[in-house]
Length: 242
Image (cartoon, rainbow, N blue to C red; front, side, top):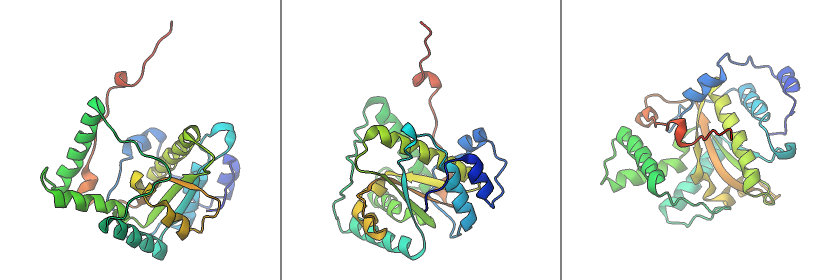
């Protein structure tokens, strides 16, 4: 996508799409990770508007470090085939950034609870290794989404700037909800970054952080019924005045 104006007023004037009435709070509560999409394209003007709005996300010194590469159609199918083949043939992943997933104690409990909630909806039992492998492979099929966005940033940046990219991604996903779309943020999309750079002819060394599959939700997919709980704010938020 081309770089778009960072001025909200300018972006609004250029848009030909009527913005939805959904409020921010409703979008926050309605957002959930979708793992099954309809084979339905998003109108081009809506796509452009989604990214125009997301461009308003904050960033350190307004550097706007995010890079988004969106694949659809034949390119998406080619990337999907390559990634699935890599996984099924045992090609080792080579992410640009090391991923630490050593969840322990209460974090491990939450991880297990999340997996149980998802696999229960999918009808996958604890000992069903084949079913779990199939569920894992669905990531690399983008859950049949018509679009997969690979999100990256300049290799000179580190964790602090990656936080800015995360804020942009959340802005994008909430905007999608307001427009009747849904998404799934996917850490697995960092596994084979060289395929992404080749597909998009990326010459500037951009590193891939994660991906977002998106489109219109297929409510008939059992996995999409999955809902996870959130802790009371007392577990994460600490107020003090002296």
